[in-house]
Image (cartoon, rainbow, N blue to C red; front, side):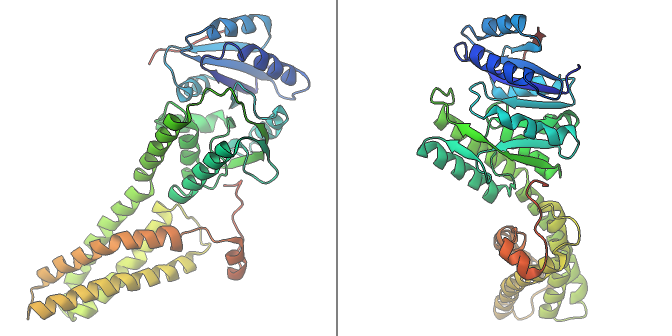
Length: 385
């Protein structure tokens, strides 16, 4: 039976743990796993006996292959294994097998059926059962809360080493993923969400491995840098680009209206027209909201944000006319643009955390709308048997 699912186990200096884990995984798959499978041990530059142990296992166990890379990096190993896979579904799990293997079938089944594009094991979803130290619990929850706040992620657990994806979907995403290390998972999921792919979550039973090779402080720092990078290449950049076009349109409208209207009326009308377009553009482009759902509510809330900008620009005009009896229209434009730039930060904050914030279930009920379901939401490697 040809492989429907490639299960990648990335390893780095895991000589001791590798044989027992692979045999345990092999036994689980052999004992009734309904899809054709292949285990790929992806060794990324181990400097102990891990590679030799992997080749020994591949020689003894059917369906086990070895992929070796001369450069370190878990993300690099997953990228190489998934990109070269011939299976319709690819997945990976940490070598410590901290996640109960009974969650493997629920993980890959929605991908085989075509229901979802990616699937993740979650230690934070309802029904999950975990055994880990308070420190690891705090770090995990804090990190995922940071992702929800800064990157507006809708998945609950970015770090669990138990994920799967349809090969066609992941091959489209891999060229855009920059990280080669531990942030690879998070970046892949964020890009998948931005692309509108469906991410399925499976609550898992998970027990902490006390012999983990993860260096918490350097990994956490790299993750924070990755979050900043995604934030700067995501919403903020799109918001600023829309802001530039809106400001140009606002200035041109003001000058056109100024020939027949007072400065205050010209400012209010130009600002109102561009505010409608700005809210609509940010709704679709910056925050990725599609369809008619909540469109009216977003425009009404955007109107309140418009009042803030109107107050700032009108105040700037009043100060200008108090200082200069009859200022030239171009001088008025310069003052108004400077005032609108000053309002940009407050506008982004309002849009990000108020207008386009996900309503709570209580708010959804009050608005009479349905909540969106969370789940819908170097060297060449060598492979050998």
